[in-house]
Image: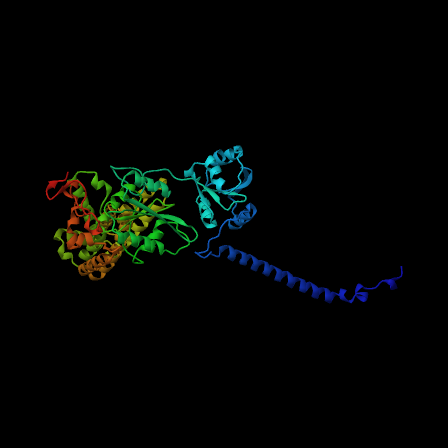
Length: 552
């Protein structure tokens, strides 16, 4: 073989040399990188276009072409694997059934729409006949007509099905929402001895029905608004028209309309938005799981806010008097209920002041104690390694950690944790000589007193106030307790709940009549007036006694 005939490719093709190849390869890599960047930018642009809100005044309507309508819905519900699109024949025309799997009663759709549509022999010629065909398949109360895309999409997201017929811009929204929900059960956070045992669940419709069952008053009004730009959560405002002040209702609706948030998960999200102060120590809005508490509040001239997907209802306004009331107070003898109510007020003082008074007297004013008790406490203090204030602070912190752990633990572990906590706090700490045994009794009594509160959020506020009073008492003694009391009282009087003072029903002179159902509880016959603090349009309840005479 003649080697002289063998030549390099680059000799006859100069562009095939290694340098040129490397340069071309480098350019190719640059082009690939640029194409990837362009691809990313295109996807970002598509995502922004999908999320771009349509102006409020812009109305988008369905087209007459089924293909075009399907494309529109496919773009709106892109990447929604649970969306179901089923084509079928409706009176000789192609139709499309759209629904979300899991939110819709598919058996009802199969039984009423698909089965009857296949049996229908009438031919649709004009839009006027589509209603007639639908009425043969569904009852008038089971569907509505929609031509706006936004309204139809919202109905689909609520669990209803949509029927789109080729050649018509009118679409049919079928009332077929059915999804997994919890049954009507007893409230787990507001246990009572005697009374109704049904509580709210996470379905707005069921909760409204529970309220309607307890009253047949036509003045009971329900207004539903959607809150959340993305979640579109339904929120119901419930009130009695001839009792609640119109200004109160309008203020509630105005504050709900002003909520600018993308999603609502908890009813407390609403509470934070409509509460006047950003960081209130005590709740100024009542939360409850009980429909009977809501109905009682409505007939006092108050307004209830019920949110879908949560069992907690909100009631406004909310005052200290209401925080001291329980359903059981109205299910027992009047003297017993009054005694229990006064014990509850006393428990508030114990929860806030007992540790601070112990620190003040033992550390600053031991002469206030009887001589024998002062000597006994001094002997106990002689064996304690820490000052009284430090001991109290340590014990209160341990108690709060223990209570928080009990709340978060599974139910099966609560008993075991309670036994361990009792041994650690009540026995081991005292026997080890880390704290004064008398202080253990004081802290235990404080914890028990806090459990007497009817509202968990109110009790949490009292527990935080206890820390503040303890710190002031550790520095100033009894003067600190008095100063902390004045500051706390002024703060509680400054709190407002939709125009009403939090302590108004308890301290205002013009509302002293509310003491009939605050410090004590009088008989219904002797308390014919609604609470003045809420400003109900009709202050007098029908029946009972008025001016010493029974009303017929």
